[in-house]
Image (tube, rainbow, N blue to C red; front, side, top):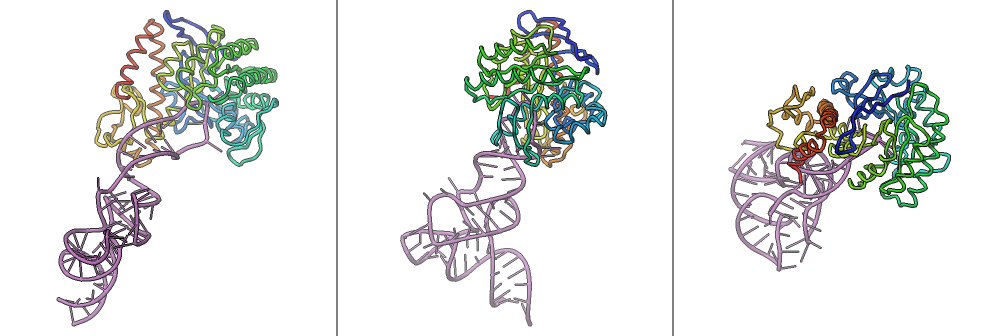
Length: 375
RNA sequence: GCGUCAUUGGUGAAGUGGUUAACACGCUAGUUUGUGGCACUAGUAUGCAUCAGUUCGAUUCUGAUAUGGCGCC
């Protein structure tokens, strides 16, 4: 089986929806947040800890695993699930974003065939094509593979985006043609920047190719404004089928997850919870806090009294600050556990809010508290 | 007691007769959205032991004092 999305309830006053995704590794409710495990590990967390924060699908990366250890070794170990000992579903990103982010200021050559660029590890010349990306993902044996797309910077011109969207559609078609893993779903990606006509065109043409799910890409790049991000979602969603899952790539911040859900997005992924954790910061109901701040030095309270995560159940802020300021790896681990749980809990609450038709009230209440201490 | 060398921020220290006293660490605050993992950005001595003198101008030269290291009696 590939995956199956079931739409259970549409929200009354918004585009938000509650649903379920059935996979070979269990059934999960949406909206959901997917933790990012680029190199076949959600940085610093064991699979047991991931289950402990109620994770569903997690994300791994085609580009990174292609270079190291190589898809053949993963396949030899029995596929990604066995390789990393994660018993939940796994989505693999196609490498399209890496072409954009790794080679941001370096030489890269985007051709019709694919993208020529240099390895970030040893500088060797690489060529990633739609066919290659799909072949790697087939071997990695993830539950969901992503089409190989071009992820243009927010600064890209309309003309550039127009051509880029066309090429991404051609690449999607080529990738789908060679996809041959019967247990793996394949998603298409809508691009088009902040332009309504490009998003519409990209969505309609991508849907014609009939994928198992659709994602909205090219958002949250390079300091793109939130308004542009929300527009990109609004311009794409109306053209996506109701009976397929919708994935907003790379998002995000709590406020963006809420805004995305309200606009009809089902799943999200983002490096933020684990990255800011390693840099000593945590999401809380009252906004983001920085453990480098001196005010936590003697703070014997829990990170969040109301949070059910391992970190909040067992440790004081003073201890976490000590770990962070002394650069102990446990500090980043504890904050990663909390931050991921925070975003997953957020989506759990959003699901409840959709079921009860209280999503706008929930947003208001959440953001009032969350933004109270900032700005 | 005599001689001698030293004294620069929270720390280790560089340096110069002349605009804002280098650098590092620490500290303080911020950034991070399909991860080139533990990064980046910014701020952080109104003052160079104290007092006097030389000088247009002294942290930098001179003298005294204080404190410390070393040597001698």
